[in-house]
Image 1 (tube, rainbow over the protein chains, first blue to last red):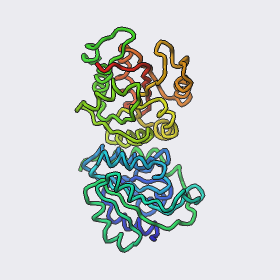
Image 2 (image 1 turned 135 degrees about the vertical axis):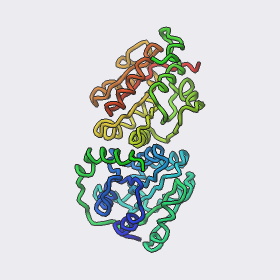
Image 3 (image 1 turned 180 degrees about the horizontal axis):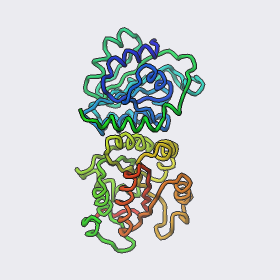
Image 4 (image 1 turned 30 degrees about the horizontal axis):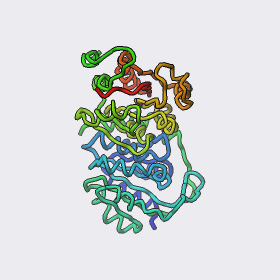
Length: 188
Length: 180
C-alpha cells in the first residue's frame, strides 16, 4: 500500500505537459503538489472525471491526457471504461487512486473493496492495465505507463488519509477553466 | 440556411433524418455522442453511424456524454449529444453541474419517446415527456421543438449560439425522423 501524496510526487516528476484531470481528494493532493495551468479540475458531477478525460484526449490527439480518478468516482461511472476502450484514444492514461473509501464524503467504505478495477479495464479493452501497490515499483514503471500507447489504465492502491480541507471555490474557479483552455489550445 | 436542408421535403407532418444531418453538418458538428433512442435510432443515429463526416462515440450511459462534450469543447471541437428523454432525466446532475453552473456549450438532441407530435410536449400523453420543458425552463436551458422539417431551420442557429455564448441547448425531437 502506498501513500497517495508520495505517489503523486512521483507522478508530478513525469507528467510533463500532459493535461491532468482530477477532482475531490485526488485534486486537493495533486494541486498541493503540482499547481499548473494544465490541471483540469472542474468535473461538475462525481464520476465524470474519466469522461472529461476522454473528451480532452479526443480533442487534442497530439497531447497526453492523464485522468487521476478516485475509486468512488469510477464506481459511479464504470461504463466509461467500456466507452473509453471502444473509443481507444492512444493519448489517454487513466489512473485510479483506490483507498476503498468515499474519502470526500466522510470516509465511508465503497461497496466492495475487493473490486479489481484493472481487471475490468483489461477486459473492457484498454491497451494495458496495471496494479501498483509498491511505491518503488511504481517509480520504476510510471514513465513507461505514461508514455506507452493508450488507453492505459492503472490502479494505485493507496492508504486513506486524514480528512482534507476541500476548498471547492478555489478548485472550481472559472478563471482556472479559462486558463486551462488557453493553455490547452497553445500550440508548441 | 444550408442548401441541402432546403432540398429535403418540408411538408407539415414529416421529419427527415437527412434534413437534421445536413443541419448538424452546417453547424460544424464533428462528434456525435449517443445512447440509442428508439425515436431517432433508424432515422438519425443509423445514418450518422454510416456518415464519415461524423465521429460517433457510443457511450454506456447518457451522463458520460456531458463530460465528453465538455472535454471536447476545450479544443473547440463541436459535439452533439443524441439521447432519449429518459437519458436526459438520468443526466440532470451532470447537466446541472457542467452545462449550467460551468456554462459549457452542451448541445443535446433529445428524443421524446411516446410523445404525440400533434400536441405540444407539455400536453403529451406521457408524463415523462410533459415534464421535460418545465425542467429545462427551471434550469434556464434554451430549448427548441423539432417535429417537422420546417423546424430543422432552428438547429443550426441554436448550436451556433450555444458555442458562441458557451451555454447549453436542448433540441427536442417530437416525431420519429424518416430515414430517407
